[in-house]
Each structure stands twice: as structure tokens, then as C-alpha cells.
Amino acid sequence: MRVAMLGAGPSGSAMAALMAWRGHDVTLWSPRGGGTRHLGNQLATSGVLEGNWRIRVAADLWRATEAAEAILIALPPVAQPAILQRLASALVGEPDILFVPASGLAPALLHQLASARGFVPRLGALAVPPALAARGANGVVEVTALRPRLWLGGLPCEATADLAILAERLFGLPVEPLRDILAASLAEPGALIEAARILAPAGVPHAVGRLLLGLAAERDAVGAATGRSGLPGIAALVTEQGGLPAQRPPLGETGGGLAFLEAMARASQTAVPLTAAALHVLETAAGESFGPHPVLAALEPGPLARLLGGTG
Image 1: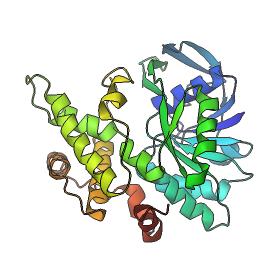
Image 2 (image 1 turned 90 degrees about the vertical axis):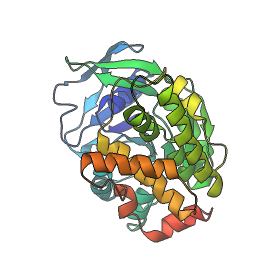
Image 3 (image 1 turned 60 degrees about the vertical axis):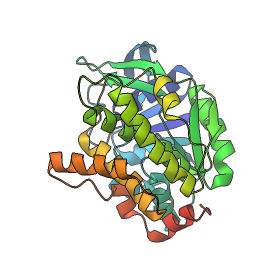
Image 4 (image 1 turned 180 degrees about the horizontal axis):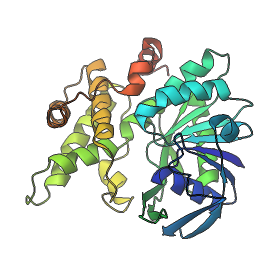
């Protein structure tokens, strides 16, 4: 299958390598070129997925996606509104599109932008990427763990089963369906994991785990209030990736993830005091606000209201 991988950070590069290993024709694109500047037509990985994988490197977004049967997006949330606007203008054919991970309802934003052009692709959101990875000093991507399973929600909801089959074909991993992209966005664990690591007091046994469980309980309460009960358990999300990731996300991504959860809590009238306090502490320490989430800020009220009303 011809696949465009948008985003050449450690996660995007690891996914590109995994798909190439499975025999897919992968084109990798980096918005600024930093993740692909050192590449020719091969991507080197080490760890649990070791080898040199044949890929293509695209110079621009249009060349990356022009012949793609599937498009995968692994970009920082702050970059997504502008890049999704460009992608909506560049789309041709009928590619299925997967966001890995969900990035705070980014599929709904692309649906909004593409619909304005009369083009409505099938969009999926994975709660977690299939691989845990970090980039070494030599540019080689170290894949430290492959997940045993994935979770996916679709837009429209009726597309979830077909998009799950697509993800299984791309990555060779079983995919469990979630209700929709909101469920996938709530299930995304990265911000909760990093907030617990930052805020847990040093030297206190199991402090990170306790704080993470408390944050996850508030996430589950928001899920229940929005009709998205049964989200993947936080313990499974952490243990199935081999523990806490070695590579730490930027503080802005952690703050943005907490801001997304707090926004969903406000919309569903759910109390999340621990999440709100964590967000306030991080904003105070950083001297800046992390809200609103950049995707939510670009999303029109209608799509969000439909999702919260259960008609997404």
C-alpha cells in the first residue's frame, strides 16, 4: 500500500520503519525538514525493530500525499491547524487518514476543513502510536517497544471497523474499536503520564503511579459524562508500552493535553480538580498559558457540540 507519513519525529519515523518492514511503500515528510535532512532513501532503526528501511522522502506536502492510499499524521498539536489547512487543499483521490495519536480532536478539524471543499475523507484516531521510540545522537531511531494492541475511533463512527482493518494491515497489530474520535482523544495518555512525572515529589515511593491513577480517574469521569465509558485503562496503556517513555515531550504538549481534558470536563460539567490544579501549576512554572488547546481553538462549535451530543 502507498502510505504518506506526515511527521518525521521519533514516533513518525518509527511508524514509517514499521510499515516499510511490513512491505508498504512509505513516503516520509517533515514540515521543517529536520527529521528527514539526514536521510537518503533509507531509514535506520535500532532496538526491537532493527534495520535499514527503504522509504521515500518528500520535499513538500503535495508530493508526499499525491498518490497515497493512506495518510498518517504524527505532528505536534500546535502545528496541526496550519498544516491541516494545507492538507485539506492538497488532498486528491480518496485516501483514508489516520491521526497517531488523536491530538485533541484533530480529525474533526480536518473534517471541517475538507468539508468546506466538498471532500469528506474517512478519518481515524489512534489513542496511542504502535511504537515507543527515541532518536539517538547519531540520528538512528531507537524503537524501544512495540505495543501488543491499539485502539481506534473513526469519523464517521461507521468507518471505525474499516479503519481498524487498515491500521492492522499497516502495523500488523490487533486494533480494538473505540466509540469515536472523542473517545480516542480522551484515551490518549501522554499528557497525564508526563504531568505525573513532573509533579510527583521526588523520593516518595509510587508517587508517580498514584498521581497518574488520580489523573486517569478524572479522565474516566469525563469519559463517562460524555458517554465514552470503557476507555483503555491507564495501567494497560503504560505497561503495554514497556513502562514510562525515555523521551520526554515538550512542556507545551503536556500542558495542551491537560487543557484539552479540562475543556472537555467543562463542556460536560465534570469536576476535575486534580487536572485543573496540575494545569495551573505547570502554567505558573512556565509563565505562560497552555489553553486553549490549538486544535480546539481552530474547531468550530458545531462539530464539537455534535461529538459531545453523541452524534459525531
